[in-house]
Image 1 (cartoon, rainbow, N blue to C red):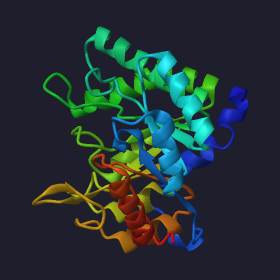
Image 2 (cartoon, rainbow, N blue to C red; image 1 turned 90 degrees about the vertical axis):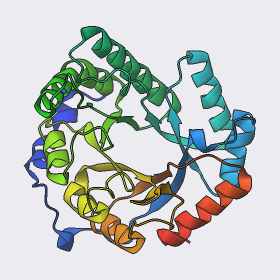
Image 3 (cartoon, rainbow, N blue to C red; image 1 turned 180 degrees about the vertical axis):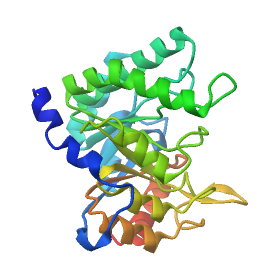
Image 4 (tube, rainbow, N blue to C red; image 1 turned 90 degrees about the horizontal axis):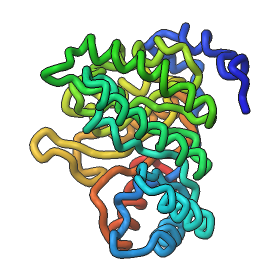
Length: 289
């Protein structure tokens, strides 16, 4: 178990980094591992069959989603171990319906319970990260309130659990009317001054209002995980390589910040042939092959 001293060692250095990133001191040719979100798998197949298929078609890693039943989590864990599949991350599920930024204490309690379950399941799987959408701006929650309320709950109620399980809480930028610029995204993370609060960056989510490679360079060493999607303003989310994402620049930016880890595809589900094609697109677009 990490001590609090171990956890905070080096945190000040991370926080002191500016939201801009200097490419000159970055690593190049960083290793990226193919991963997919568990919801992309055929619903009619068993975990065992699906996970073996993932490994067979070149996806050695998976991002799970929080499940309500601990027995189902045990089943997922056993199937992944049998297939030789690494579950590297858990996508928290409670943060939309019950945001941490809600003024309703009951909603906040439900959100915290969801994160506790996510962190516990990550520990079970051997995953190092839980994805968290930290807040939602809505009629009863201003941008400022979303910032202050969510940070307070994360500090007081979620980070102690993350420390216990030694799992990173990775903040994702998504269409929640919050953290709309890379500067805000970086500042929000840095204000925690905590080594277990990092960034989960979704390449496709910012295309509508930003340039993803610019975000990657500003996020820099804060980057814990990456989601892969593609997007066009006319058609919304599309298959990889069919949208407006500049994939050569994405790969270049990931190299510049020295990102080494999983790149998880988050698209609609499909059969083996479809998923195999998605994997080949990842290889081509990120130059993994």
